[in-house]
Length: 302
Ligand SMILES: NC(=O)c1ccc[n+]([C@@H]2O[C@H](COP(=O)([O-])OP(=O)(O)OC[C@H]3O[C@@H](n4cnc5c(N)ncnc54)[C@H](O)[C@@H]3O)[C@@H](O)[C@H]2O)c1
Image (cartoon, rainbow, N blue to C red; front, side, top):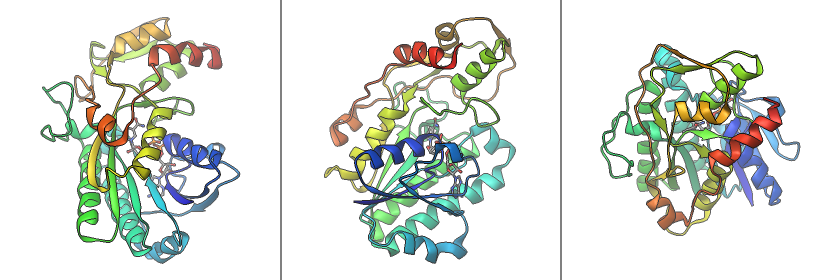
């Protein structure tokens, strides 16, 4: 089969690429390397360095998609805090990028597009665990853009010639997660601080909880979403571990010194209800974070 992976040089996308290549699929990646890295590239995939938000290259994209069986759309600028600092840049990149890829995939007669959505759409919810039927409450430019992507994907499956599915990932972690710079996530930041013999900086009181989801489990969800006969009409499906940990607990699992710094605007708790993913995709998470962290520490030598 031929598959297109947008954002395939990034953290999660590169794992999707590797998994498809391992199963001998023909894989084409579209990535502008804004946050993607050359070292994440698989030498058996074909890379097209293009900006999805640029509508003047739509014909190129349609050509690349010729005879493709599916698109995994992961390309996005993907950090909440950065989106608050650069809302216009984020809006242009994420909203136009998703519209462009949906239109191109539909023009190229691709059967299905799996969209990487985000648990950030739930915002500061009181209802835990989050169900897909809960009220949407995005509280950042990034969260709004990810939600609008879902709305666009659903609309395309209704009135254009393409099936779509949206997967709402809850905090991804795993090999190749960013450990430095503005795109690092909490586990990566803590790892980087430990590598540099600095204390881990916990924002606020550290009681905020997150549902951490292993990248390999997210990849499996993508593969199942591409093939499941039960989806294709713009369904939004949570992909989480179904368990959550406070930032204090994560710091404890990593071990060592930590200090408390000023809080930022962020939801207090996230936790996925994963019943819909079990039902529609026959998917369940396999990796537990408490088993992964010791291995991560060993690999990094921290
Ligand atoms: N990491 C998480 O915890 C998480 C949680 C929920 C949803 N998501 C979503 O999953 C997807 C992948 O996230 P990630 O953590 O791997 O991020 P990442 O930054 O590592 O990867 C994103 C990739 O998209 C590429 N890209 C960005 N804009 C592009 C454009 N206009 N044209 C072409 N390529 C472009 C980047 O270069 C990068 O390779 C994103 O859509 C993100 O919103 C991630």
